[in-house]
Length: 164
Length: 461
Image 1 (cartoon, rainbow over the protein chains, first blue to last red):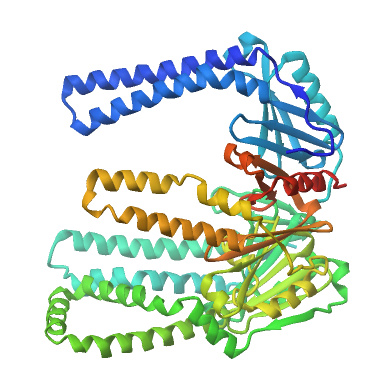
Image 2: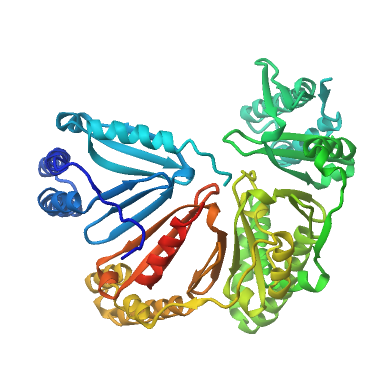
């Protein structure tokens, strides 16, 4: 899609790729451990046949999902994520297969927060969450200094009141 | 000065109590004898205790519930053991609606509920004299409403109600009604045998089914008409500069107020049957919380004649001018819709071939149905950017047309899937304030239109 106004141009941190890989690895690892435990229990206690099949199917799904979401997706996601914050609106653009463009007027922004989990902390990254009356949006993996500056900037700009 | 609700409240709660206690009482005193078992005696004691506690409770609740208008706020005092006080600033009260159930009507009292936009529950003053309710509403409106001039927009006629009762399928209401009557009686008089005998008799003489279904249909139609009449009879739409007023119901009267400023969007809903009858349901999507009867409150009369509806909306909300001539989707959109893989079909086909390969022909039939649905979806879809307004129409069998001004749209999203990019189309989505948030989207508009739409929204202010 080509638009005549300025397109979102700011990138998220390159370290996002490593961060996503690490956190997704942990997530999938935990999932596989649980599945392994269940399969072991299945062997031991002889559950129904379909339960065994279901477990193997889930394991296969998890492995496929791991290949995609650890090996492939993070790099593309990082490369395609763009955002732009101006006086009038927040613009977000992301997605590999499905490209999503979001436009939130600054006047509708209700709150903005930064947050990070333990893995993000290791990489010095923050998520920025922007909430409106309708929903909330996240700019993922922004370096610390930038994130805090951005949060304060949005908070300041969003002061403007709008009747709607 | 703190005021109590009308003392009739106690009487009304006792009437409700009696209504709820009839069946347990029959059960405990008619169908089971005291001599039968010890639990009958205990249950009877429990029954009396329950009645006593409920009556005392209703007296105490009435005694302790008090309200007061002081300064610019309404104060509410409640609680028997735990006292609580609630302060509701008057300017926070968004909508007021009045509900007069039949019992209330007998005692010439009414229930007023005041909706505050926020998360808290609405304030319910459930037994007030009509005069007191008027006084409170007057007070809420303040000075601005001193010149009480409500414009009159619509009053339902008998003919419309008659049509409505058929399009709403309310004549099917007889089925659950008969069912519940049967099961209630069955609980006490073991009808099982009787039903089986009747069924056997009918099976022996199948022609009996014709008069029986005819009678059931007529009975159903009659019940449907009566029910529609009771629910929507004397329906009226009125308005003044700031508010819209809706009145409906014969036995249970309801009176709603919607603040015009809070209206976020207007939605025209037309299920297939209503389209045949040229009727339409107009729904006002409103930011304020409208209480438990949410779905109904937002809707103007659900069976408005299409032509009247356009006039009424224009009178109520002059800014919302609906342009009937809208843009169609391009031809390519149809191809995208037809090509897009259908998960429903894939899963259904896989399941069918796995378990019931003999019925393989179900799969192409399903595919044809799904494709027909997509073709209809393509046929129905319309969009238009009309000055500061956006119009989106979508749906397959029933259609929905949404009209909303740019400044009431909370945010927008444009999505392009891989397939859509190949065919240069995109999906647009908007969010409106409501509870829950109201999303509307239109798939497969030309990518150029999507870009224009994005720019149009960016150009707000």
